[in-house]
Image (tube, rainbow, N blue to C red; front, side):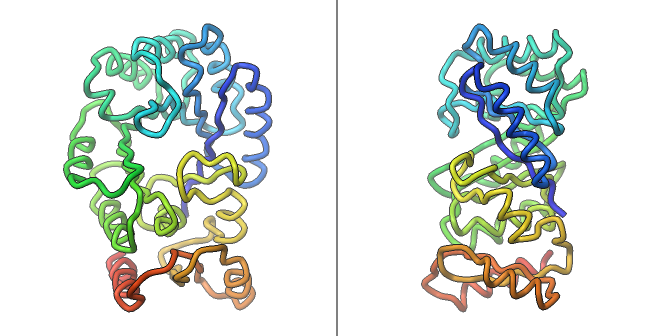
Length: 289
C-alpha cells in the first residue's frame, strides 16, 4: 500500500486559510500526508508566521518544501533566506514530519546542512532530492549513490521524466535496491505506473494532486484518481498491472476490473512503437518484484 502525499502550494501569506482548508479536503479524500509547498514564502517577512501556522495546524503530517527554481520550484531567493526560514521553524518548535531540500543545493551549503541537522535533532526527517524534468539523467546510479551515502539524510528522493517503459523497470529496480527509505518516481505519462505502484515496489510514498490544476510535477494523477480509480490503498504484492498503450484515463477499464473482483489495475502508459517489447519490460518488473 502506498502512502499518498498531496502537494498544496501557498504562494502568498494570505493563502494560509485556503491552504489549511485544502488540507482538510485532502484528508477527507484519503490522503496520508500534505506537502506544504512554500517556495515563495522564504523571502517574505511574514513567511515564517504562515509556515509555522501551516505546520502546527496541518490536518495531516506534513512535508515542508521550499523548492528552488532550477529543480521545478518557484524559489529564486538566496540560500540565506531558506536557511533563515528553517532556522525560524526550529527556534519556534514548528517541526514538520519531513523537510525536503535539493541535494545539489544542500551539499554545497554548510548553513543549509546545519539548519537541517537542527530540525532533524528536533524530530524531522530530512529528504534530499534530485529532479530532472528533461529526461533520465545519464548518471542516475551516481545520483542515487551520492544521496544514499550522505550523512544527515533520512530519505533519498529522485524523480525524472520518463522517456519510455524502460524507465519503469529502472525505477522499480532502484526501489528494490534501496539503501534507506527512498522515493523514486518517473514524471510524464509513461511514468504513471511508478506513481501508482510506488508502495508495492518499495517506495516510501507517492504524490497526488488535489485537483487537475494543482499538481507539482508532470504526470501527477489527482487524489481522486489515485484513490477511487486506481484503488492505490488496496494495491498489494499480488496486484497486477494491465497496461493500456494509449493516452487518456482508464476509468471504464478499472470499473470493470473492480466489478469483476480482479486484483488488477489498468493504467494508460501512452502509445509505444513496439508493444511486445514494452510488455516484456513490464513482465520483468512484475517477476522481479
